[in-house]
Length: 287
Image (cartoon, rainbow, N blue to C red):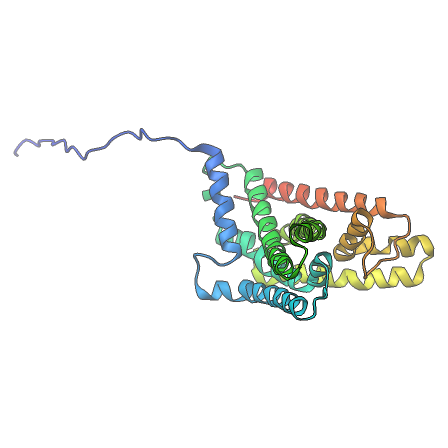
């Protein structure tokens, strides 16, 4: 039998000498990917239909507001009223996007791939939350900026008019930020409880819709104090009461009496509770 010989092949293996980007880069990449996914960017046409349908609706409303002001010279709705009037499109947007951001990862069992990187479970939850907040702010903020530009060009008082218009825009953008922070936390928490996107979307819509009759029942059956506080039972009316307390009443004034601070406290509890439970959910989820 001929003796066996061994051959060493040089396959050009080299150690990695590049920069190790680490945890911050992983967080930023997950955030950027999630923002793109919220609008269906980088995905097929099917993933873009519903988000961009909602975007089309909010932009159409903005175009109507701009056109009405340019023709009549009067304001159809304020910036705050614009955000308040689009509660249902925003609810549908959240019901579509929140499950897309988290339920898919649960269903496809891709969380171990995320956590094998320098990315903690808390990082994952907060990156997804920040992405959904950004998506809602863009959804409500960009049309308001378009309305602002249209209003500035229709005013005849130059820089003074633009400055006054900016003062009206501020509460509108703040209202969009308040909605984004609170609703994104609630929606993402609900979506993280189901790996099926259809179920998660139904649960999100259900929470917002079922709590609306509760407000009406409490307002009808309760005493004056309970009537003032009944709007705390629904996230949408909670935010209306919070904005009314911070910026003052508008055309759609809620009868909250002197209980404005209770709405501020309620908003903080809802925000902190939803984000805290979201983080706790991903600390315990199987990976």
